[in-house]
Image 1 (cartoon, helix red, strand yellow):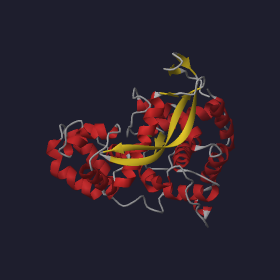
Image 2 (image 1 turned 180 degrees about the vertical axis):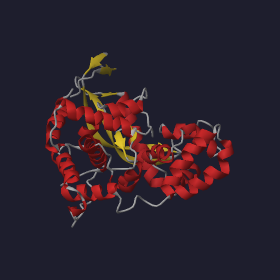
Image 3 (image 1 turned 120 degrees about the vertical axis):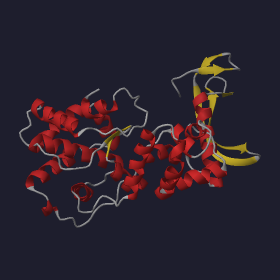
Image 4 (image 1 turned 135 degrees about the vertical axis):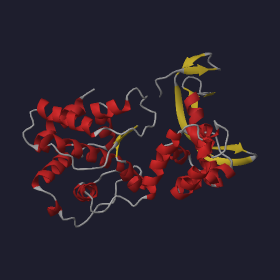
Length: 331
């Protein structure tokens, strides 16, 4: 039973309703598609009633089936493109020679044609294709800043991956070896906390890489694209890792973050970071749901975690536990 009431035409009153799952068939472009949807029925008389949220969810389910059957790019992939290449929706439309609002409509859920979808699929899968497009059509952009920002992003994608023996890569291997299950989201937060608490205790940063203030908290961009295919699943465990490459001080930070922070899910850690000064400062006045590639200044991270260390009177990395518990119970 839902707590929200909606109007029933039969009862002529706002009523509670019951939701059931059912097989549905609808038409798109003169062809029928079957999908699993939901129906709402009045709890009083049992008649079918209209609930906007359920209608929208059914339309998304229908579109998902249509996309899959016709080889149309998914909505998630469309929404990842601007973030991947650090370009706005309107500039991307101009770059493609489309109407200024065309990509924005697709981003909001409209169905692209197969021709336009194929172009977007190539852009999504092939940074080199996008790079060539950016160079040949940069004159269509309204500012050099938009070009330069996107140029840096695609150059980073085309450059060699973060070296396997870099500090951040070694730390990732240690986390994957020691953690029972760690998703890409949780991994990003663990790296952020390791960077912050290491600075708090030793006044130096472990990673040269900067993290960005994405919607779901701090993210190391290159690491995101390395593991994004795991989505919400745990990353494959690393075996036979030699932790002797780390100093005792480094290992103490890693182990404390694993014990006291990685025990929480990625979504819980995301909530922690949304209440912390570095992410909030980098985001500024951006609404929480608006994508951003703003860099979280290392100075913000260092200052914040140094303050946390002093506030909680942390004498050793093991004292991170008190801060983690305080963040968990924070409303």
